[in-house]
Length: 261
Image (cartoon, rainbow, N blue to C red; front, side):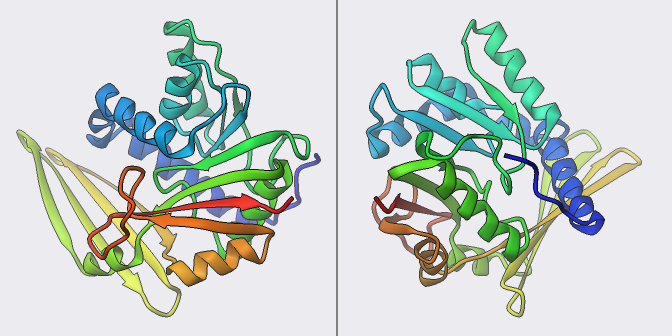
């Protein structure tokens, strides 16, 4: 499928997102929090929830450094990873080589997926990988995911829970990182745009680096309407991969849906 034409302003914004995720995952203390034990637990919860068949084709959209995809491949699921960041895709490929895992990682744009139609049984968008684009491009992403899924294929979205996000509106938290290093995180929610902006300022002695990103925060009816208007049937909404209950204290909202036959 040919890449979709985008104007420079949109591509520039997409590059900002790429830079944010690369810095967030490779140059900040958060990288160290994504331990092997944490990923193992998340994948155990994921497989228990989704009940993948061994012959099913699974696409991880916005796979980052490939931690979920690699774990799925290690237990012989047919998982494929896609991310816009060449840096993170290269990290994923290097990890696969170290572990002698044959894991296909592809650099691509979720608004125009580089795959044939109706090839995957599952699509996953985990850890807040969906929602940071414009409303138009978020919708394009759902359309593209629907295109590459087989009839009856399943989509699992893990996004921000609006009730939890609103609790963080205006929050400013400082994290001590040792020595003269610390992180200041600020969150603000716009009721007009329905978006949460998260700014992270890293201080290392006399050096400072700020990165930020803006997420569309959905209510259950809003995300359900978006999905159902694009051919998906929402079958379950829960508070995490392991919890059936969605509450105001749930950090995430996990939506399980199915493409129409």
